[in-house]
Image 1: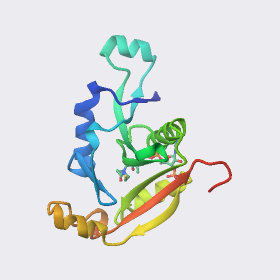
Image 2: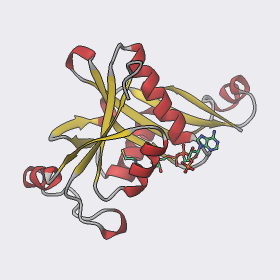
Image 3: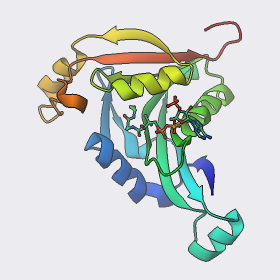
Length: 180
Ligand SMILES: CC(C)(COP(=O)(O)OP(=O)(O)OC[C@H]1O[C@@H](n2cnc3c(N)ncnc32)[C@H](O)[C@@H]1OP(=O)(O)O)[C@@H](O)C(=O)NCCC(=O)NCCS
């Protein structure tokens, strides 16, 4: 069994939407007060491949089972790039790490100096995961989810471990040699 990371293609749309609905209950993702149509963003999917890739394509029309998704938004001027969603179905260890590495490569290849993301204050597992992957805490956006909820009342009020969702934590990785 191996993990294959590839760019999102139009044929992935239903799996992409299912993944977004599972974790975010919507295709529209709010981050830093901005709304992203995540099912229209570029990014990467992970597939679990059993056996040979070309044989699997010949057999099933695809290389393997959908295992995870990362979506990305380039900031104007391509100075920096934001990870809008990252999720893994847990089918293969290292899926989240491989998708995050693909996002970092994409940002470097587009000349970005920094890649960043936000996660909500309840998502302590994500904060652990990103820091274990070498990302750094960059900022606390206190109360930003409460403010967005005034515009979008159906945003969930509680998250993991019944923690009220109120804030976004920004994490980052600099892509410039010598800058941490
Ligand atoms: C956060 C999330 C994306 C992590 O994905 P994941 O696939 O579980 O993560 P990984 O398997 O890559 O990493 C977990 C561990 O596997 C390890 N790992 C990495 N590559 C590996 C490999 N090739 N083989 C075995 N283990 C590996 C990692 O080092 C990590 O170990 P650690 O827990 O000791 O730090 C996932 O839990 C998820 O989908 N959460 C819900 C959605 C979410 O909250 N997303 C983040 C908010 S944007």
